[in-house]
Amino acid sequence: MEACCFEECKIKYREFEKNFMEKVDEQRKLVSRQISVKGKKYNVIPYREERLGNRLKGKEIAEIEMKDGYCVYGYDEEGRIRLVEHACTSFEKFYNFECYDYVGEKVYAYSCSLLSSSYVSVNIFEGDKIQETYKIYKDNRWSYDNYIYSGDNLSSINVCIQDIHGEMREWHENFFYDEKKKLKIIQREEAGHRQNSFCDRKLNYKKIEKALEEQIKEACQKINLSDNSVKIASIETSLDSIEEIPRINSKFVFENREKHLKIQSHISENKIVLRDFPLDDFEIERVINSIFRVIVNLWEENVLEEDIYARVVKEGDILKEKLPGWLKNNSQIYFSEGKICCVKSKKKVTSKSIQEIYMDMKKAVNRKKDLQKQIEIFEEICKIPVDNDSDGEDLFIVSAETILFKEKLMFGFSLIRQIPCEDEFVQVGMDIVYELDDNNRTVAETYWSDEIEEDFFRFAKSTEIYELLCKQEIYDINIFIRET
Image (cartoon, rainbow, N blue to C red; front, side, top):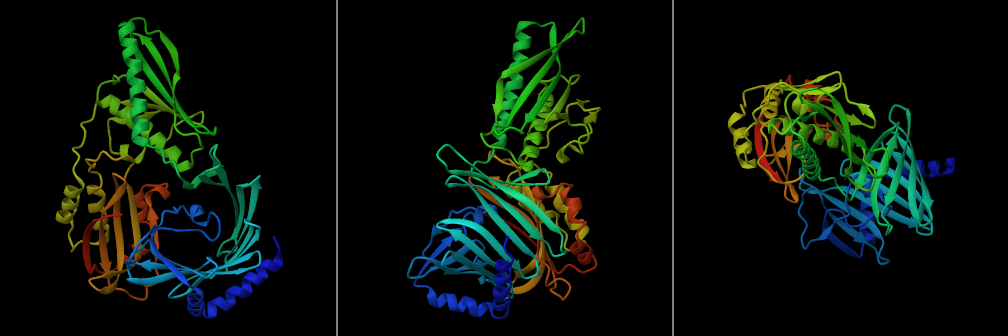
């Protein structure tokens, strides 16, 4: 880390901050060719978009739409990107901009919106390999990236960042490739936690559940066919995700119905290999959730007798503390000293189509009720399962930001249920609309349920903007359904 590089970056940022839109206009003059795309087309700084969790899947289009995700790449006569202009749904115009300058083995990156500058970075290369990145943000934060290579492949990035409060954070971003040296995963490690920012191979949770269910059913059938005097007394399902090849193992304890003798049986030949690359913390929790779901379903289907108990093991430790959120209201399922027990089979809730859930929400909403009641209405309807064969689970989103409502700038507190549907997603939600004022016009917050450790709706009601809006009158409510 060189002090002179940070000084250079600070000087560049101060200049950019004074006239950032002039910089955008200057870059336009250097552009000789433009490409309009939906999504991302290309990275000037290697792996930048993957590290943010974005995909490079831009599709060239004849005419750009002023919607989020659409942008225009501007190339100079040497084929280098000089300007990237991002469209914005709310403002129906280009709202965010990226500018790039190339000087020797340095690439200078500038980012801004129509309203303010965002950051400036100095990126140092050796040939085609980036070595270091120095970045200064508008709120006096700074960051430093050091790139580590193994042969021709980038193996890791050591990141050091100073936040707005002056506190230092460090983490590592590790890169995994297949045998053909194709990038598969970028996984961030910080303070013992792992998170994938980029992964080209998502887990198929429904397939995992089906495989585990078939494994358990096969074990039950084998024991029933071989000896009617023996039954399953308990089942222990463990997730081993420390190794690079994560897997699920199951172990059963059989009991003689008359003598109550217990015999352990390891089913090693039926290990369920999840993927040939490591899991992150979120994926681990999703797999654990799938294990719970299978066990409960088998109780409900009477494949497993209600007097057996189950254990779920993660990294060698038996889970003893709490059930997943979706089981909290199930009075028949409970924890007891690490044992998951079933008192009585629970009748399944009837599922509905996405359109039916949308109509239920339109009927249930009451524009006279306060924000707390609207969240409770939304939460209750979100408990209805979707009649859907697509893989993956629903995600919930809460956002608070300026929106365009009936051709007028307003403030929206939006609650969204994102449902996987074939190769896309369908979002059903409500925009709770307020008058735009000095207290909320600078707020721009978005939270996803897979990023929140506690109950998502409890979290939504713990935010500062929620406390603020509870004191204000709701202007209107818009119920929507859309594809993404």
